[in-house]
Image (cartoon, rainbow, N blue to C red; front, side, top):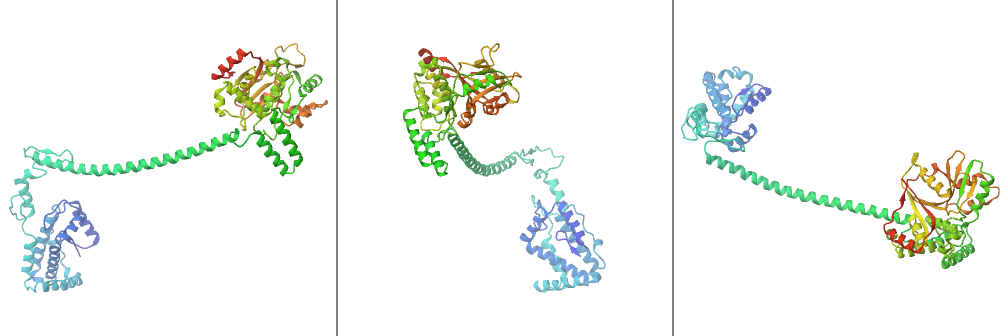
Length: 578
């Protein structure tokens, strides 16, 4: 048998005891010794074990005495059962007021036979208890003494009135002291005050004020703790954010520096030397690889130093006479061409050891200038000038900047070109030609004007530049127009003519400074092959860069026009073709 520690009821199995304890947990739990209430079952057990350990021990021994008496004294069976039932009823009433009282019929009648071993063990323990209480012989007196000590009649906490049982005491309190309870009687007309924070009902305004003050103190304390914690969390979050921002800025700065250095190397602004240094370095590499004899190295070095000293190109990369050979070819062959317009005579210049990878703009200027030098109309502006070497061209552009041309472009290149491998483009070519009193203009083809990213408007503009009168002209026309400087992202070339094919499509003839002299010299043969022209021909489908710029020469500037253009270059913008 299992006995409940709260009300003393005995049950036969563990599931029944769990069900029985669930009833206690669902109802209000009241301490059987000091009337403590308002706590759960586990807290009540802890309270009894700590605050009423001795009284709890007496109760257990008292139950053991009942067991002994019930198991050994048959003639006192009814009185024992009645006493046991009364005690259980009292304990149950004190601990769980909603639980029904235990009757004598709930006790087993054949307990002696079925639980002999259990009663034998309890008998031994009871004898030890009797010995500890100075071996009193009257067990009934011991029970009554213990009962009176543990279960005295309940006393009113307000007026100290004593009632026979807890139910009578509950009725007394509700009727006589209803004004002091949280839930007074329904027929009470007394003014009530509800706590706005927890809903507690108070009968007195001052009590409510003190009660609310306790709420405010508790809330203030909690807010203070939360405020300190929030302040610490905010400080930590700010530190983490600052550290993350610092790392992000550092990474962005590093990436920007790498990109900037990459661009500097790409555009020749990394202070790694200019034309002279690259020429010597590449020739040394050729000697080390066995592709140049040391004597050849020294001869070329001497020629380079002489060329740099006088500022004139040594002509080692120049190919002349190509335009005349093209004119002859188109007159006698090229059956697939309806008409062709060629520029005035122009020499081809290609890159050398000193400017490979960055000198295309300078080489195209040499080609354009070589054509102007062959035209008598520009003698006054060029004053017997020879084709300059690349370092000399750099010096001439710097002089134009000093005169006040293109200050924005000068600042982008740090006002310095000599001793660098800086790229130049259409703006620098325009600046240099204008400073030489050569009338020219920049035309910007800033977007595609045909399918698949092509630029048919560019071809039409060049055709109108070379062919002022298209009908009635011979098949091959050698005009007096200078070649056109053609620039796109990363490279530049020189347009020396344009073909009109039998099918009315257009094809540009282009000199590329990346094409070496040995390939260009194939065009000088009398039996020129059509395949040799492939390196010159550029159809509409071959030019698909996003944007193109051209510099076209249109004549000579007077001194006044030069000054006006210098002033206009302060806010210079290229002419855009829609």
